[in-house]
Image (cartoon, rainbow, N blue to C red):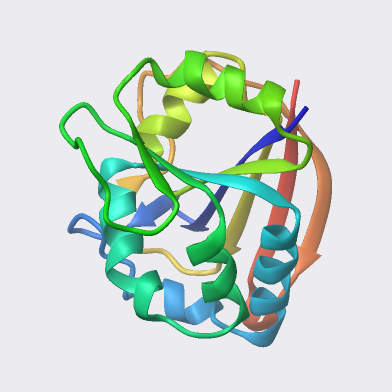
Amino acid sequence: MSKLILWNMMTLDGRFEGGQPWDLSEFHPYAAIDGFQTFATEQLRVADALLFGRVTYAGMFAHWPNATGEIAEYMNSLPKYVFSRTMQTAEWRNTTVVNDDAAAFVAQLKQQGSQNVFVFGSAQLCATLLEAGLVDEVRVCLIPMVLGAGRPLFPDGMAKKHFHLLETVPLGHGCVVLRYGQG
């Protein structure tokens, strides 16, 4: 059975996106250091699949198909599922569009796998899967900066969830990966 892991980069004030949709320019480059690249590659080596909401899929698709390197190889070759009520097809290689109930689909996907299934970005999808009790782990790369505006990773109105610390992984520039288990 696969573990479902939410993976995001987030600022100290809880933002995973800047003032505009898919605005990552102010803080993502800050974490683009050797330690981060190693951590990201190690995650992808033990992945069965990647999950995205429609907006995150569009941002990822704009970058990864033309990127090079080991991370790009994983991003392009792994099975990907994009959850959308409006998309019918996806152009990125190895991508399936899912218009059905995300929680039911992911529950079944977890049963079929043996490694990790990652949700990258995709705040709305993350909230849906957290509410359904399907998330096994939350990983956040905390970037030591305050944006002051932008989209929070966890929206207001979510039900209270408790997590316990599994591990901290210090990276360069003061960035830290925090791994939390649910419960």
